[in-house]
Amino acid sequence: LSSCTSAAEKEMGGAEQREKQYRAHRGFGDRRGGVISARTYFYADEAKCDQHMETFLRCIDASSGSSEDGFSAIKLTALGRPQFLLQFSEVLVKWRRFFHQMAAEQGQAGRAALEMKLEVEKLQEALANLGIATKAESQHWFTGENLGVSGTVDLLDWNSLIDSRTKLSKLLLVPNMQTGQLEPLLSRFTEEEDLQMKRMLQRMDVLAKRATEKGVRLMVDAEQSYFQPAISRLTLEMQRRFNRDRAIIFNTYQCYLKEAYDNVTVDVELSRREGWHFGTKLVRGAYMEQERERAAQIGYEDPINPTYEKTNEMYHRCLDYILEEIKHSRKANVMVASHNEDTVKFTLRRMMELGIHPSEKKVYFGQLLGMCDQITFPLGQAGFPVYKYVPYGPVKEVLPYLSRRAQENRGFVQRANRERDLLWREVKRRLLAGSLFS
Ligand SMILES: Cc1cc2nc3c(=O)[nH]c(=O)nc-3n(C[C@H](O)[C@H](O)[C@H](O)COP(=O)(O)OP(=O)(O)OC[C@H]3O[C@@H](n4cnc5c(N)ncnc54)[C@H](O)[C@@H]3O)c2cc1C
Image (cartoon, rainbow, N blue to C red; front, side):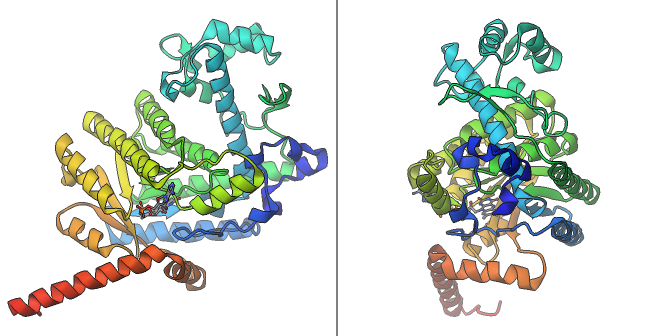
């Protein structure tokens, strides 16, 4: 739990000002609760993070050695103190909410994220009235590269004002919508925490460079919603640097999140504007039970779609948007990471309709090792690029993950039965055809 709280905050009592969702919570210190299909890392110390990085490096080397077209997946919680991810997530979310608040004041509430465009003049007035920045001060925020072509400010322009590397430790005030008080966007880090943050970014850098050298695509897994804004943003910053010629870094979007479509569309638009290759793994999301329980207990809005059907709709909507993007620019890439047969069928149908051929290798499929071979193998045989997620690392560390999944996943047992039935059917068919060993 202490790895999720900041020493500087403890000294200054700043933790009380943190938004509920982004506060460390004793009851949820063990983040494994209800999680079936993802491994959980806990912060021990910086040396352990270095060890994880070494394992990831070996994994990248192994992927490059076994295939010309390999992927490796990493988790950012393995590479640093999660407290930094919590705090940075809070900053990003507060900053985005502030944008929505400004948009509402300009009569644009309820629009899709990309449709909100703030008039600079009015925005500067509002900032001055709120006591955040005088017109003279905010003048340089909205010039040149920080201002959209149309002379308005949209969410992308707004987000570009926050940069994890250069401006993160600068104190900025934003209004708290509940209390009306101005609050620092970010509590200060101690010197040691600042160093821990930098080391985490350096580890990511080392991995991205090795992946580029080896021609292996690096997927950054999505994790809990209170870490995810930071994970996604840091991944996006890697994409900007490493995806100029091809998609090396893949971000992950969880479609069980209510905000998934906004996240996907905003990031695709950024890749278009800046000209880099968009790469994504699309999943439904592995932490639903834990997320719901945490939101209910701590008392903030549940970030997950209300029903399974809504999540399915969201998945197909996001996927369709990316497939359309592939059709138009051929710069986007997607891994459909799902065991859901309807989703796989939906993808195949839309690929055909949009004229995206499997051999172009823009659309990949992914399933977890030991699950859904009845989907994986036919896809592979039909020429679609399809991958298995294989846990990699010391046996004593990956075995508990595998056995946990096998024990806990009721769907796994059902699917295993289905696979067994299909295998029996095939054996019978071959026996009857007299071709069992052909
Ligand atoms: C290759 C691969 C990589 C993955 N990487 C990640 C990752 O980086 N991060 C991550 O979080 N997960 C990851 N997952 C796990 C994934 O998010 C899902 O938990 C898992 O694949 C089950 O979803 P499905 O699409 O396969 O199948 P389904 O069985 O059709 O979907 C189950 C999922 O639907 C959603 N759902 C179920 N009931 C409800 C409900 N009542 N309301 C709202 N939503 C509901 C949940 O997300 C649940 O996990 C990965 C999975 C694969 C195959």
